[in-house]
Image 1 (cartoon, one colour):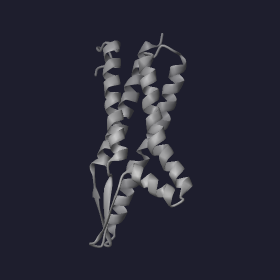
Image 2 (cartoon, one colour):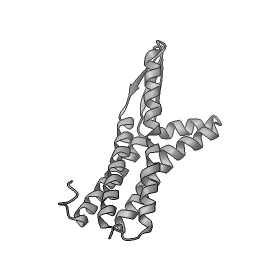
Image 3 (cartoon, one colour):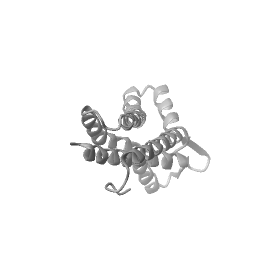
Length: 164
């Protein structure tokens, strides 16, 4: 979208649609398996973000549970909600600039899960005991985070254009 030629109201509607798509991808990303780890030949375990969090809670790893649930579920979900609120208000309030800056600066931490899975993949691929198969959950989650980052960027540009 070229920022000088688009109608701001139309762009806001399109951004809302992309944000709705990001929410759907986010839900799919946290609920569907991200990977399967196969140890030796006989043992296989598939993990999604939600199942991994459930395992952490059941095993008593509360600090790790809080950290991952905060960065992987709460932060991206709050970012999507706040972006929806900013777009619904069409950037009219001056306080929205501070809010969108906060979203833009701290929302990148949602990619932490993708980074952790990438590190795990590399470390397991280097070992001969286990193998890892990536599933759609990782792609859904990464796509949701990237679309949300793009919507944030476009929203920042819209707010900058609407400044007097």
